[in-house]
Length: 312
Picture 1 (cartoon, rainbow, N blue to C red):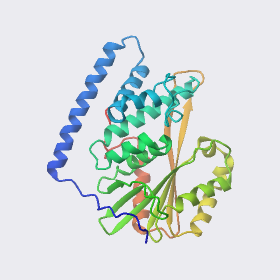
Picture 2 (picture 1 turned 60 degrees about the vertical axis):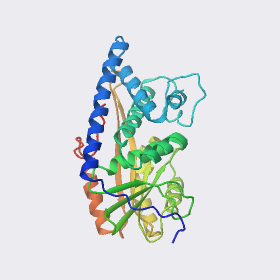
Picture 3 (picture 1 turned 180 degrees about the vertical axis):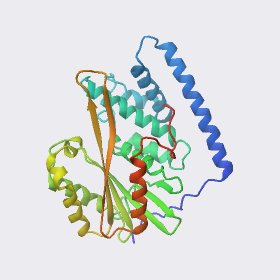
């Protein structure tokens, strides 16, 4: 067994604590409405797009600090770029795709910080976003957001342990404390061309973080260049099947990638949303298999019925 520190199970909040969380949520939503009105008054000639960006930066600054926003999120700022500047496209050329990506990533980051303010793992999430590579930490927060759409689960972000087999990112308990789902979150930042060895090396590295004999999974954020590569699309299922045959640590891999749509005849018409695909081992635990079935149905819906949703 790994020798890392043992963390207690996260407890379920009492009804009084849940009521207090709801009151704080309502107060924060009111504050967002007030901030919107303030930005409308201060920036009457700006587009809604531009005012939204200022709103997102203000929300992020409330959680990570204004200095962090200036170093990472302020478009073409004079300050030295921070660790998250590349991910937030701070100094990228200003074209439609870049502006859309800048908007989307600011929006998602602000939403996660707003939505998880009352969670026990909030401080660890802020520390990860502030100090670690932002692309990886932001995707980790996105994975938590994908998981909390099943409210009866207990979810916890883990701190770094630097212990092989016990250095994964997220714990999920679905029958407390009978069965724990261990999740390693990976982003593949290399924008180079897809290769089978590149994919295998990435998921093999993630496998080493997961405990031996546990119920483990990998959530992998694919580069756009990989997700759209015809070779990846043709052989991904075979690659993952072969990978599952060589390990007992990983029972499923969930791949996530961005889908960008843009109408060249209408410069303001763009969209950017996540796509997901679940690959399962033939040895997958029955409960995890059923849970992933539920998630696939939830992720396929346009309306989010269960998880907390920021009012912006």
